[in-house]
Length: 489
Image 1 (cartoon, rainbow, N blue to C red):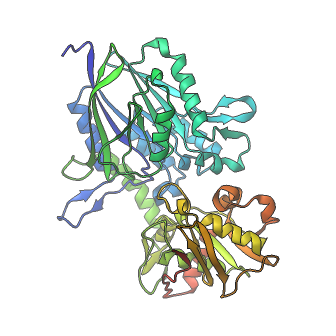
Image 2 (cartoon, rainbow, N blue to C red; image 1 turned 180 degrees about the vertical axis):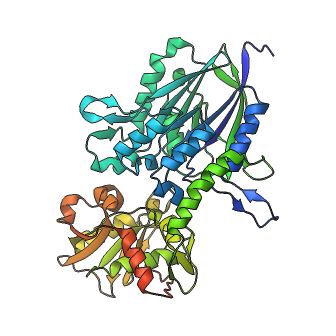
């Protein structure tokens, strides 16, 4: 092999790490740890020592999902990421959870480049971040371009000055613009770092002109576990699940003459004690954050009758029913909508600490109530229960309170019946519904109803988390069952 013409590169990649900092002990064998930043960092260090040309990239959503992240509003995460020293990162929707000014502060903290090509300050048509990065590695130029999901736009609804291209055609055009501008710079490898979901990645790849020379899409957002990368339009598409329990690894050979990948091998490797030795430096940094958080949040809030579970976002769950029923006690509310994805833990109880509660329900938001007609209520349920909302990583499934029963015919794509405490809604009668501020901001996309149709809002509570904490403290041995509130035929 002519080493000048062909170069071997190793690209390690993570996505949707969501503050998954700590290793979990496994039942397979004592002392066998799975995941966590310490083992992940240990493996990255090992590969950097063993291989010549190593790149580590992250495809969005470093933030949100752990008490350590929430307590420090992502500052702890950026410190930990600085230890990992990724070569390039792209933004996910959760990077915007603490607001735009805070994101810009976090970006200043980062010792690594963050790329995004399609977030704009609308008035001035200026990009918020660097759209791309060209790294020269062992004489080869590698270009990374960042693209984020339209979910980010919804998160930013409250900040009117920022916008993004909201569809894939525009994102593809943006990639084309950048690739065309650097056509004569002899870019050897072009990698798009996306946070739009695996199915959208495949559509995006199909839209890109082969002349642009895009070689790979390394994605996130849909938490997809792959056996092997997809290949669309001669573009390799990969993703590495969710959290730090695994890491993606590409070993590729690039041809300098044709600027293309001539050989590749991909693995999704389990991050465990067999893969690498833990990195003790990063472990001690995380321990300092953990001690502080434990001291503050490990107090007992209340007790459930038994452990309640939330195993999947796309179905009615015990924990979902309990949370909606607690919110329903706040006021004279007919229907409470709680997004299944807002419940981040898979189980809670029987003992419930403040830390447990905040892990399970990390997003603190205002709860609003609205009056809608019976006709609009039927419209909401018809939209909300459509089959695509049950697609993992794509739609948004909702949990609803006691007394609601909606039956949806998935085959015929229609709502068969809706009752509130056994009564069908009357078209002209007014019903009181409750939802959080984020869903209200995005009511059209999430519930199929406009702000005009929702009418005036009233605040039920400024803090959904406070409501839960207070209720758990004053009601012991709470229980909840799956009752068939939302039924699919």
